[in-house]
Image (cartoon, rainbow, N blue to C red):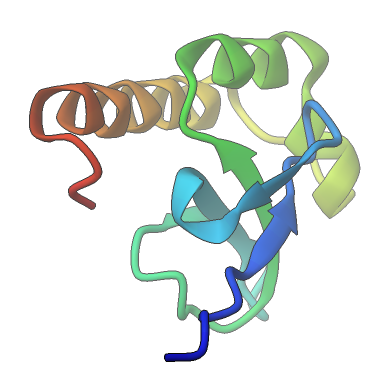
Amino acid sequence: MKERKIPMRKDIVTGEMVPKVDLVRVVRTPEGNVELDPTNRANGRGAYISIDVKVAEAAKQKHTFDRVFETKLDDSFYDELIAYVDHKQGRRELFGDAK
C-alpha cells in the first residue's frame, strides 16, 4: 500500500515546518475579522501556530498575528488563542493523538 503524503505547514512563530494536524489555524476573513478556525476550512487568509502554550504566549508577546494580518488585535484575541491552544494541548496529552 502506498504511503500517504502528510501535509506540512509553517508555524509562523517558530518558522518550523510541522504536520498540519499539529497546528491551529487562525484566519482573517474577507470582512477583515481575525478569528480561530477549528474546522480549518473558513474562507480567508490563514496562518498556523503550533499546539503549544509556550508558542502561543510568544505570539502574544511579539504580537505576531498583528504583523501577519497587518491589523491591530486586542489582547483578548491572544488570551482566547492561548486558552484554545491549552485546551487542545490538554486533550492531546489526555487522549493521545485524538483531534
